[in-house]
Image (tube, rainbow, N blue to C red):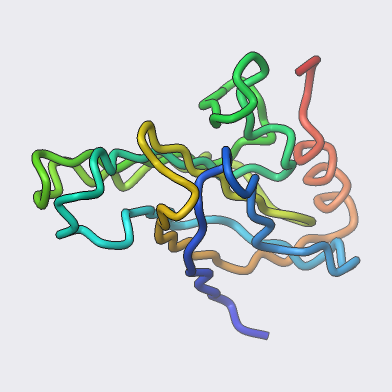
Length: 160
């Protein structure tokens, strides 16, 4: 099995299509993944008619960890929630200039055993606004004890 994997594609924002499931549980709890890179961007960087293309993204091990509890049409960045494992953003200056491309923050202690979800929010996105994502993963082999601990961590700790 490969030790590295790159997941890349396109999605719309959570307010239109919900979160996107990137990894589906294969039932093998000893085979896990760690995120090493997480990037997002608008699909057409030189589209001056698109309005704001500032966007924020989050990766989580559970779909319900992505959405803001009071505004379920946008994602939240909740660094206390252990189910969220990576956060990134991209800001634009003017119509065609990337102003700030954030390499993101990735929790160095996370391990993905089951599912990985991505959510992206943009202030002025429409149902046809498309965003790119790229997630680089490295394989982690776990023994049974490590697997149990990773599953507990994936579930989260505390009341959310």
